[in-house]
Image (cartoon, rainbow, N blue to C red; front, side, top):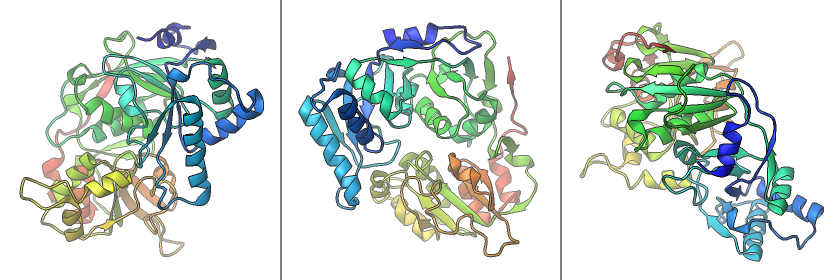
Length: 403
């Protein structure tokens, strides 16, 4: 564990907030959304020629597509690029969504404390790193001094034991876990059976997208006294509704108006492939939107195939009657047209969505979150509770509790 992360983790008692301490992050990431504001404040507070305290720890990232960017966004890209060149920093131009990976992060086996102007990085969290979102004013001071104040919230250890049953995904696990995570904590997850694969990174991405936790990381062999224990083998396909979790098998029969599969946190090619395997060769019975996580994932839909000689994912979705939506945050910013908008004031739609962020605040609709597999099966039948869904319902009821 890095010195900075060790100091932060060991400060105070796990059950309560720790006092603020000075820390020196192992990595500082400036992105194209809030980075330019931090650079303006750096000039205002420390001068146009201010030296950086630790330039070796600063990475600059731009995900802007310059061919389609508005003038102000193109200007942000140019400002970041010029700043990186001036201070000989690593500059990464990677067009994509929020979860494409923002810069070279901690190598395997290294646990870093990362200060970032963007949201926390799930791949880093799965490696045991902690990504702290820092406001532009504090980033300016951090660049100039190399350190910042940080306060560790209460710690909540969460231990996941065992393997998920067939047909159950980390999306179902995330739906179950969200209500169990206390608000404002540092959630430290340990899943011993999945330390070396992508399952933890996927779980961290889903939880970081819509979790009450202030921060999430993986703590291997963490203190398990007082931990929240989750039996992975008991998890069944689930539907989330606000703070409530419904077992799919026992959900009351309900007609569904629309299905939305994708978003920045649930629209990777791996996520969409799960849905494509269900939809291949069939037709949806309700309007269904497929929204890749990023432009990169959108392009990959034409390259990734089901089987060696099978159709590409885009063909599968189009032949199934799905609409391709905008990549990224379309659900959250309501850029997907009428997904949750009723045709009359007296109508309230029922929407099943894999999106896990603030799409759940769409009060015009009853929004149920589901895994890509569950959402695709519901899209085929247009309702929840049909007999066709029973074969994926898994175990009878999910069970979660303290060990």
